Length: 479
Image 1 (cartoon, rainbow, N blue to C red):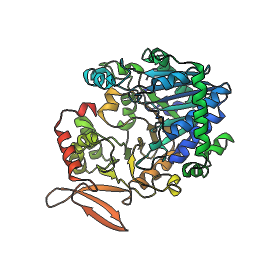
Image 2: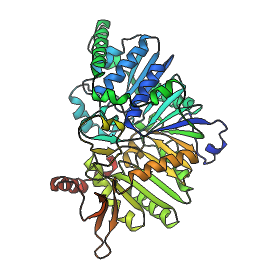
Image 3: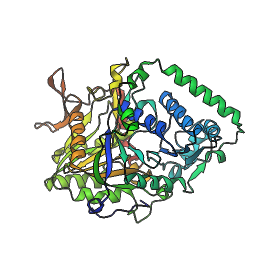
Image 4: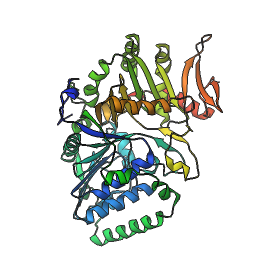
C-alpha cells in the first residue's frame, strides 16, 4: 500500500483514533446505504469499482449521483475497464456535467469488440485489473467491501443473486480510504473517459440521459423491488446520523496501483504481504470466507501447518452448484482433500441457502438461488478483515485489492454470527471423507434431516465434466 504502509501487527493497537463500523450484510440495506450516502452528499462523492452495470440498480444510483452533481457535489468516478463494453459514450456524456469526472483504470487500447482479441494477445497486461471497491461521501462516510454496482449484488435480479458483505465506515479510517482513492485517481493508469471515446458528444445529450433516468426512477416507484427498499431503515439512520456504529481501532490495507504493471521482487507493498503477519500470529481460530478459494501449494501448506499448531481453521467457499466461475472451482478442488485430511473444516455454500439473501426476497417472487461473494476473515475472535480480496492467485498477484482490519471483539462477534449462519447445515455442505475408502462426502440438512451426498450436489454431469477438463489446463495462476 502506498499511503498507509502497516507492516507490524501492533499498528492497529497503537492507533489512538477510533473509527465507527457497521456491517452491511443485507443486500437491500447495502443498496439503500449507497443511495443515502449519495443523497446526503454536500461536497464530494468518490466512487471506485471493478464493475458498474447499466442495469436497474445501476440506473437508480446513477440518477441520484446526477442529482447530487446538479446541486453542486463534485463527483469522481473511477471504474476498471474490463467490464465496460459499449459504455464509453454513455460515460463520456455524463462526464460533460461540470461536476462529474470519470476515469477508466488500465484502459485497453481497443474500445469495441477488438477488446476481446486484445485480452487474448496481451493477457500479461490486459489481465491485470483494479478490483477495489470504495464509495466515499464528503470524506466523512465510506462503504468498502465485496459488492460492485449491479442488480445481482442488491437482490434486484430475478435469478441468482450474491451473498455478500460490506462495511459502512466513519471517522479517521475514511481519511485513509480517500487517500487510497486519490492514489488510484492520480495514477497514470487512470485515463479520463474523454480521452478514450472518439464519438463527439454535446451537453444536450446529458439532458436526454437525465430525463431517461428520471423516467426510470418514477416508473420504478411502483415495483416490488422499490417497495421492498422501504422496509430498510438504514437509509434514515444514516441521514439522521443514528447508525449504531461500533467504535474500534482499525487499519486500511491496499495494493499500490503499480501492481498492475509488473510483479516486483519486493512485495511488501502488496495487501497480501501486509495482512499476513496478523494471520501468522493467530493462536486459536481462523474463520475465512472466500468465494474464489484457490490456496495454491504454498497456501495449502500454510493452512495445514497452522492447523497442526493448534489453530482451528474453518473455511467457507462456493459449492460447484453455487459458483459463478467454474474454472475457479477446478482450481480449488485440487486442494480440497488435503485440507480436509489435515483437520480443516471446509464448507461449501448451497445454491439455495435458507434466509441468507436479503429481505427483498420477501416481496419479489422468483428464484432464491445464490452465490457467495463476501470476502472476510475473523482472527481469534478479535480481528476482523473485510475487503475486496479473494484467497486466490488473481487477488495475490494480478488484481489490486483493498480491505480494512478492525480490532474489535464486538464486530468479530457479529461477523462470527454471519459465518455461523452461512455454514449451518441448512445453508451449506460440510465436506467429509469416508473412513472406509477415503472418498469425499457432502453433509447437509434437508427438510430438518441430515443428508449425505457421495458426489457434488445439485450439478449436472456436463458441468462436472467441464470442471474436470478445466482442471487439466495450466491456468491456476490466472484464477
